[in-house]
Image (cartoon, rainbow, N blue to C red; front, side, top):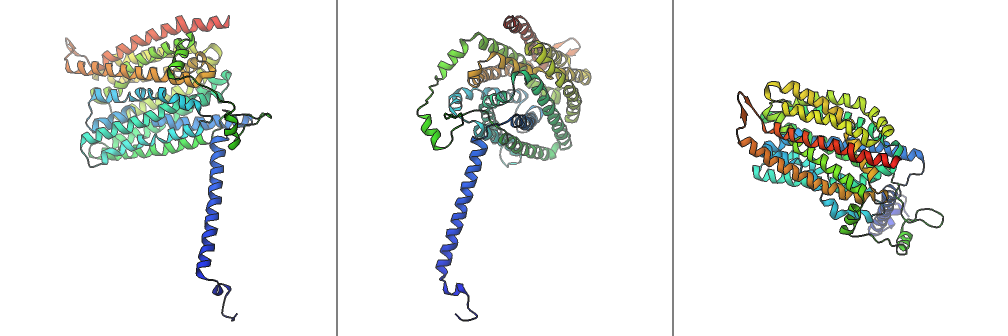
Length: 491
């Protein structure tokens, strides 16, 4: 070899290229195996091994749920109503469409058997969480150079798809966190979680409300764009937090009590096939239980009172009462600071005195909220809305926790995910029907001039009065039936 030559001068270019391609393919295969191994460890082998793992997972759930609840608020309420009004929907149509999330719960009935067969549900929950990206997408629709009719169709489609996926994943998510929190700690844990979630939610809503107020008129699309961008980031945070959680659901176990993975699990599964009933068999089994029927009746009463009025109060404040976004968000923020301050105490009281007992008293706050809004007119709007929002904050300090806690107590623990699916799906459809009927009533009342001498009445005053009446029935049912059942179990 001459001094100026190198070893590569004696190697053909084709051989060098083939060697490089072989090394590259080998590297890619190694990276793919590493990725698949990491993927399996995160989503299929995330079994908690210590109390520290349980506690870390509970903290991650708080992060994920805070993001999730903020998404619900930023993609609902006054923000969603404003978006819908901007693309040509009426007040009644906007109120009904904001309740479409409850109708989407019907799809739980068609997927609960598939979800129940999943040995591990973490990946499924995370995939359903990612579908909330459609909620971010709908806020970019006003930027599209298309007709209002096409925009309305895209808003309905995107919102409905996102709500279907969110509702399908809800029972599995609730069963997941219930398995991570012992029954004796549920009131304390869920109250702490709720306090954090509310603080994050109202802070983000305040910022977004100020932006929406600043971006009015021709600049309204800028507000929608910022709101959609925040939802996008929150969806990613939600999915990341859930992916970091451990999942205590066990697959097949070997003789040593260790979980089986890989090909051995499929081989072992053939020897241990568990037959599940079909949809109608599961529903018949659920309604055959007196406790399930009690949980179902309680949920329907609550849905009736809630969907009679709440979906229409956001548009009532914006349109008839003429309130700015900033005022609504500032009042909501300050009142929710009060809610955050008392929620941990309410959780401890719930663990001490029982979920149904404290849930009953928390509903009194929401009852006052309906009453104050039923009395609200433009001349007294500000004091009535402030009083109503304060009452609502006091009531919601335990209302959501209490209903979920009572449901967990009444449902069969071995079939909790299936019974949650049936409960949420049927009550969700019922809630939508109530909202639809209330929307028709609202539309009718708005077209009819209903007035007393010297004073104009508004349709939302009637819907809030209906909500108060049904909520009073809910409180009486809690006192006379659910608490009676708790006392019988204690004796």
